[in-house]
Length: 428
Image 1: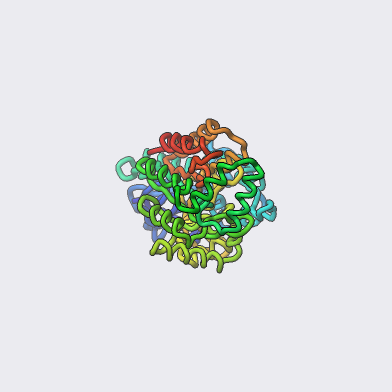
Image 2: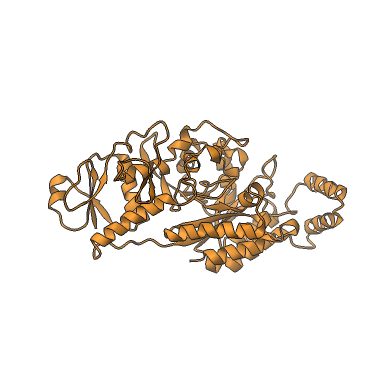
């Protein structure tokens, strides 16, 4: 049991300290009732305040956790790791962690890309090279090892590396479940491009004489499931629109695939393009997926990674979602909040910790392939480098894939093998 004394207690300090020691390090802790109890106690002790206390590990309180700067904090160095707040020879660890996990930089950023997202280049972690490694985890792990050295019998870190594969089911099926007019239009396009075989294949699938090629996504996941701690499929439930291309969720083939997926994977909602603002639409799509699988849906990842902070997360919390998996990059690899450990979202405007857990991912196939222009062997190297970085801090490596790539169908032929190699390298 770690006894903690906080000189200037607040909701923010309680949130960060519990996350650091209980969730990240697996330690039990108790806050002291006062200075008299803390000074007289024996065993592991940590103080968060201005003056050090004899016999206790000291984390200096700078005031920054309760009064975050409106401009970027200066990124310094403390014993070889980044430090945002503190003096030249010490670090306000809890203010550093809160600044990064609360996403306040992103909340106040006004820059937007073509999809109304904060561009990665505008994010504090990217501009200051904090997105290249899970630095929060490295800083916290260093603190944990310090406590272990001081109290080896009472303090044992309980933190384990895990590997999680998630798949955005943007299409669900390639040919089946599409309106007739769309299938006809696609066939005309294929004919103009000289792809007669695609036309034949499309109508064979629609007639039921051959299976839809995207069913192979599930076969691939089922084969690799043993080497993953978790496998999550996020289903898009809307197919009409410039950016929403899913098969009709009411189609028998779509329903059959979703129900089959439940047997080996967790199921989440992939809310359509406009839902980051249109919360009623989000709720409608959630209800439709719940009706299909016959149970509640508590996992979500925004389509195109579109969210509006804090509104989108407040809606998810109010709709009783347990996890959101949007926290990552669409155009690069790395750690958007400089961490690889899931953490509860803290609403800095309402000053409260929520029950909504944010699960940061480290790499997405489409970012590497479409935005960074990497070939299959390069994608393997990039994904493996990310899982290695997470493994060094015993974190959670979350990768994002898309059904079109994992299908291996036609132009996507190389990618199932890439997925297999990444999963094998990343397995715990």
